Amino acid sequence: MKRILHIDGNHPLLKNQLEAAGFRNEDDFTSTKQEIEAKIADYDGIVIRSRFKVDKTFIDKAVNLKFIARVGAGLESIDCDYASAKGIALIAAPEGNRNAVGEHALGMILSLFNNLNRANAEVKSGKWNRESNRGHELDGKTVGIIGYGNMGKAFAKKLRGFDVTVLCYDIVPNVGDANAKQVALHELQEQSDVLSLHIPWTPETDKMVNEHFINAFAKPFWLINTARGKSVVTSDLAKALQEKKVLGAGLDVLEYEKLSFESFADAEVPEALQYLMDADNVILSPHIAGWTFESHAKLAQTIVDKILLLYNPVEIVEERQERVTGIGGFFLKAKNPNELKEWYRNHLGLNTDDYGCTFWWKDKNGADCSTQWSPFKDDTTYFEPSKKEFMQNFRVQHLEQLLVHLEAEGVTVLGEMQSFEYGKFGWIMDCEQNKIELWEPIDHVFL
Image (cartoon, rainbow, N blue to C red):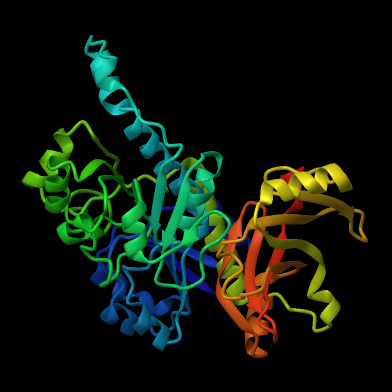
């Protein structure tokens, strides 16, 4: 029987489902790192949050470890390169709390724009100041997102209901989509009214938002950070707020957090942090953006699914027809997408909406299935790196395993698979450099 050590508490479904699958689960929430090291050789897997760093010393003692699963998005507390070199699988769950992070970031922006922090405190103290609390509207603004993975994409999706321009910057090419246009960093800094960080903590992002970085923006901006605190130099941010180069800040994470994210690193509050705590145009929360009741369960379920997949990979049927199950969508570029959608509505009777037209049909088992027709603005980056004027979307089964299979066959796989409530998405290039979107759908969410 495979043994798994849990060193942090998590949602009970995690252990319940693993036990039902035949794993033996053991808890140890109190032992020191050294005490865990003394017995880790007895375990096949370990499930952690952020209690301590899994370094080379720890990994060397974990001679039978098959996987390290972190119930969260980032893996910065793990020496990933060394673990991978030892053949240890690394499992994280950014899909589990990305929706929560996106909602939290949006909430911070709206609260800052409408002075809700200050207005709430004033009214509760008996003050009724309307003019000094006059707010701003998000519509018409440009929102810049740095880091366009699971979290950045989830946040961009939340902005779809606003009339905003959304730009994204990422070190990975061709990650822009229908919700955000990928641009160079200097272009994002020239245009953004709001900057939201969704980046991991790495040597490249450590202290990234400093005085030089802030001064590179063409106009004053609002800053949102729901990623990692050490990416922002607090003293430089405090100075920028005083100089009104930053108009306000919503910080769910702080430079001074402990690695475990459970408290401040020092009992004495640094002067720059004290300024943020006193400023009425700064909103602080204790690293809870991804910490909802719903994400608590989603994170655990994601970890369970990935552990079970590690031990019981789904077999991909070799026959070609079993890979693609239908047309998922056809996307084309247009000079004026709204005018084109109206033409198709008036002359061909398509029931168009903001996204195009959805065609419903039944599969061989009688289940409802959908195919999407959508025109995109002709300057979209969503079809890149293809230079074509169109992109196909195919409905598939078992997308995660299919992408592995395709890559082994020499097919170019673009970026990483993305998961949303309406399904999983992956992207490949065919032999004529057409970008193809692969979709493992969840149709019922559209009904």
